[in-house]
Image (cartoon, rainbow, N blue to C red; front, side):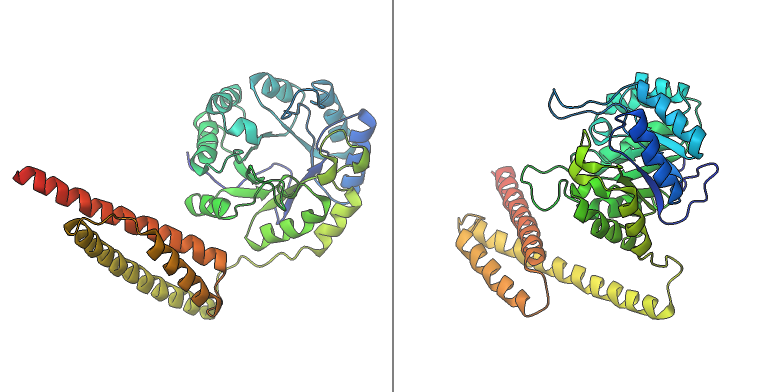
Length: 362
């Protein structure tokens, strides 16, 4: 089944498509008042967690099935569509029974093919949008595989949600964006609708806007933003939730860039890029050819492949050179590491071929 752009009945999908609401449904009053304020600001889709998977036991794990009744009340009072997270077949069946309009599969669940398969089978024959958040670990095939499992069970309306990736060392972000992964996802599946979850990427209220803007600049289709009437007293993830009014301000200043066909001037620049890439590949090919010659020389003179002092000197020299060429130091370092790793592999390949040839002759 071919993945197509997301279609949601009753909603005209324009950029950005926005899903907003609290991390967790905490009380009937909190759910309804948040929905009223969001609806007044033009938000069409209300999201709220009913079952909350927590890292450690003892935290607030959601109100459970009772929250589904509150979501139904949101729809009846405001006309908004509702969305919630499901982690197993029981969640899925209960959400369907209570008329939830959109489901999403969370990062912990999308990393588990057995759980995704269980949800997919519970959705057999159901025509509804299902959003798949990226797995906690940066595994693109696992992310795509979760979508494919749903499609194999007849779920035709599938979209992806980029919520960042876990990292042992914490930095500015709660979850590392690693933008190259959703970019590669879009390259492989160009028709797939991709949303960004700036709340989970940033983990902080002040990061919601810059992350949302970057997502829009990268051509994402929409946003899933955690919104609470009083974030300070939220029972889960209070640091990353914003008020409906703050969300309104953020959406009002977002710059949505044109994704229409390129101009001739841009096409000309892209042709220049293509030519530069062609030269780069040819230069890399030449470099690897030299590396193989070095490998042969080392083998003939009984020298080890790895030469740490030479590599360290080379990296230091190239990084100093990069500073004068408007190249980011970290980028150049990563590039040199990748090139060196491939050069070493090529030399080992030469070593093995020569050794095998000598063995066959003997």
